[in-house]
Length: 274
Image (tube, rainbow, N blue to C red; front, side, top):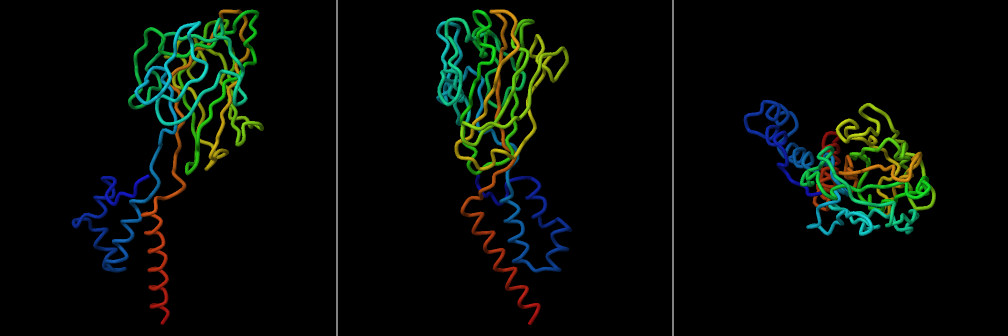
């Protein structure tokens, strides 16, 4: 995160020569302290930041595109940000079969982030299929990414299912790739907020920000798919976003300002007490 001193309209308005609040504070506490105050406000954490995102189409950033079976990749580099989704048996994931458990189907614009492709035809979303004898029930996908310097991970995505597709998606997180804790479960249904037969009917799905992965260098999120009742039953997923709500580690310039602020506050306090 940069440490801009006029990052937003709010900052500029507060620091404006015409702002009565600025003049009022300035008369009471002194110009140097006010200048420092407004500089420090520029170092406040940013709002939501995309750590990793998958639209399963964009490859210009090094991301992996979905493809129809049997040519479907089993490892998907994030199309935006940095992260990897594993379906190949590594990092604790299941080894999904290219022959009948992974494919690329039509996607959606639901939950598309900035720059995400909104093309809905062809192999524009990832399809996970139950496979022969519904053997993929219980299979797991694993995401690995970094939360170093970040806190408050939230997860969102678009999804739909066939009537015999996976009925539940259990989402969990881990600090080490071995021990997992529950984030929540997405379940089949017929209303927004559940996995319905259309992306639009499901709406943007996901989980509110949580703190379990704050500042973790190697973070893991695992999804367990279950409840399919036929070999061709499937879930389609698209436009996955891992966002953070704040940045925990300030840039060096911001840290210097914070230190300067502490020194000035101490000097001012000593002057008042003398």
